Figure 1 (cartoon, rainbow, N blue to C red):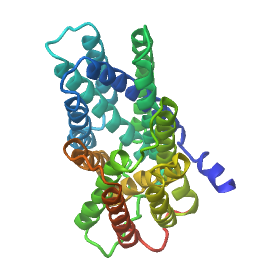
Figure 2 (tube, helix red, strand yellow):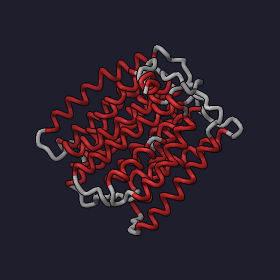
Figure 3 (cartoon, helix red, strand yellow):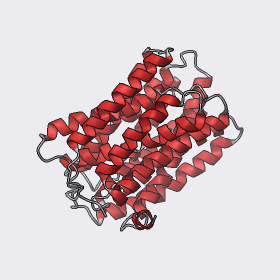
Length: 357
């Protein structure tokens, strides 16, 4: 416990908490709008698909741009786009819901990249800063969905979006003070492997995690409370992965999270608490894959983060087009893909446990 407390007091850890809040508000705005758009749409399945495509995929390009132009506040650009997309949908100022949705998605992308740039560059090679930032998203997703069912929530969310403007300005002051800082302290990859192989294998693990987020057996999830618990556990797991990696070593955290998650994921279809333990454990891999990508792309952390979001999108694609109703087929996919991820981590993470506190 002392090691975990020390991690939560690491130098510059405040940027992780700052962007946790920013990420939380961004996802509230996005999923408030998505839930309302879906309520007015005939083609229900296309809205989440378009959201995933335009919120996730552009982050690699935006990240590459941000890496090359660090003085540009991409977070502030994102907030402006977020406000435009959010307000124009509410007042029907642009033709069609998809136009407003795409603007909203692009705002989301810019803000995500900003959070990645700040938390990764200021972390001194630690995983907890960025994992805490990313963890805020799951809490925002479920909160946005709940607020969409309430009246007069629109003005509250506009106010909340406005509160993240000074936060992004503060975050970029942090970044400007470290404008030449590379992520050279990230050295978690197996140096015997080619960088391109590390990238391919790490992105594959992200693809699996993207699929798991939607495709794992959760027939127990029938009530609002259960859905809230699902998203809370996912968010907590994402943050916990980075914290435990910093406290006990990334290799131990990777093996622990994936190996222990498999039986819980397989046996939790009808048992909520068993399933939630598996989801918590597998969600921890988020920070680990990001750290591996940054280790080989330490001059381009924005691009590295963008590769993880492309992986997430690729992982969600099958969910939109293929509906697996057989428990045994789904369980087999979970078991095989999780086992492959475990073997990948054993291969691509260096064995000397660099970076342990």
